[in-house]
Image 1 (cartoon, rainbow, N blue to C red):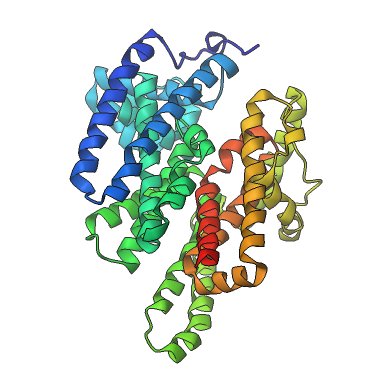
Image 2 (cartoon, rainbow, N blue to C red; image 1 turned 90 degrees about the vertical axis):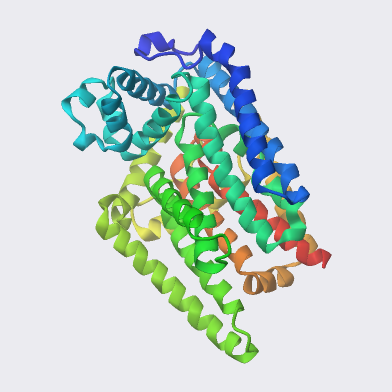
Length: 449
């Protein structure tokens, strides 16, 4: 039986008001994005995917709200929403205080702002505070309702995914349909990548960062304002919400941009000679950036992260056994670099291809098992269809495929190593999926050529 939220001292996330406001918000978001689509996109091929992708996300946001309210009865989203309610109430008592809670860090809060908080600890944690402050902003335009706040964060994630899709279709315009499926319509993205949670903000940050990087540094045909804003907002969410997103994204994106620039060299001989040089330079620069990141913030330091993930791994294993649920084990892991690397194949495998059907001990895990099984079969199909040699050639020939796989595999390792629970894994791994599936559909296109 789920523990009633009243016993936890939390406000419920769904009330009668939310159900009454649901049709209103659906109409508002549909009308607003319909007008935006008609103004922004003239290409009928691009336009056809926009609104359906939005509707899938809004449906996912509503379904996850029902799940947390009536199936689990508790969870992080309740605590985040309590913080959102604190901001909303504070704003209508004193707009200055409410805005302060949205734009300032906890350490800089005034006495009035701190007095408005129910749970101070959440605002001290940067990742949780980012969710709450973002939700607090959207709550001001949604009457403080959970469903309106949830739709706001969900559409932010959708826009991030849409930006990622626009980058990929700019490079591969003929793959608009398979890339739409890979980036916009993956079921777990449309379900777990929604709501008042960290995961949709991770998706938003990733897509915006890639968009900003591509159109600001490489393509430069979209002006400067939007790419710069996308890059800043994307980097903020990617780094603050989950540290290992930045750690996976930094080397992958630097290798990607470096190799894209190599393709601009017209002289074939010079291009061949410069390729390895630029790749080594980009990799070294990425490693240097990661070390610098660790010196700026202790949580990004490799040794601190290794200790933390082993500690997290132990706790999730204990809590899974306690709850009698859906855990998995990678064996005993030492908090050293070599100890982590030994688990690399198993961690990547569990992120992308598990739970296997026989490991789905709860109904809630069955969709994840089905998607993981599809991912396994689709991966095997692509590699058998394209061939090992052609796949390797494509990796060296196509910077975007290499970028997608580097990020997806590093991220899959980080998530598989830390989750230790199939329920948590279903949420945590979703940022890797659009990159992994995009790499597969691009590889498959080489065979069709």
